[in-house]
Image (tube, rainbow, N blue to C red; front, side, top):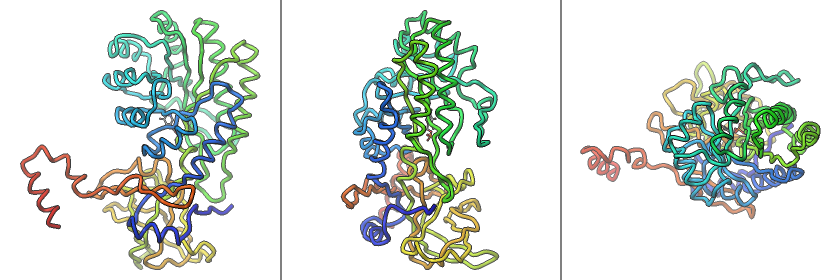
Length: 428
Ligand SMILES: *Cc1c(COP(=O)(O)O)cnc(C)c1O
């Protein structure tokens, strides 16, 4: 399978005249169509809701697009809560799935009416002390421990993860929460990341549905929803086959019909908190080749760096690269594609077969729509890039300007040196 950019070289040239590279570019059409497909795939479940994981891409314009398709927001920090509130999300449209949570964030989540998902047994007391009550609707994050393995060998290690309550704890937690006045309960679990298999959600769902039936029976707690959280992956590699959300939706339905319906629990809502699947493929980092270097290896230096996209440096993650306008040329060169950080891991690609690259060529780094811009940082004093939306009608819109030096220096406004910084920025 070939990975095709959602934009042409000509369009990028047009955008770059107004908005200099590097920038993250998002595909409105792709985002909206995919969100519709997710809702269709789960339309069999009356209460279904996707709570987009805001950390994957906290841009209000993109959040608003998803909201128009019916999505809520999954938040795990104060600023994510504030942003979701600013986009207009209210009450149960916000899921607060955080961990190691500061008291003030529970207070804000409660003020916004968000559903609070507790990451730990001790958070029952902590929440009650923070907000002065236990909400009527409450969720707990479950961690069964051990390893979570799928038939294709993909596995993850919940037993090593810091998240969630143990099996024993979740029974005890539901009993206590019920005594303290909770009326509607949710179960949440996130057991494997970036799963490129249709098997993950159905398998997780089966496990959580069985737990739900037993929990409701043994504790009397009314299970209102089951939150399958994130973890549905995307094909970063060109030879990978992507997930089929319809097959995933059907797979979850089969488990629902097999386990929940016979137990009389046919009113349980299914929630998801996908980030990567909702946005990943519909974003790209567009960057320009500005240097070539021939030493012990062949290097192409681009005007973006790991600050704009951290996944390759951080996890050795693969991001496919297309040289715009050279889609059909043979990949007969082998390059390391590097950024400018003083860190040797600042490479978008290592030993990558690509067409011959000339200075001035635009590179389209695929699949940066989730955990791309948002994971960025400011090392080496590098500034974060702009974000641009390619709209359905083919026009483009700046949806976040690039950082300027004064953004980087703004937190020194408490120091005497700040006027000098302002002056030197102004002069240069
Ligand atoms: C990161 C995260 C998600 C989203 O994960 P994806 O892999 O992007 O789908 C959802 N829920 C929680 C609690 C998370 O921390």
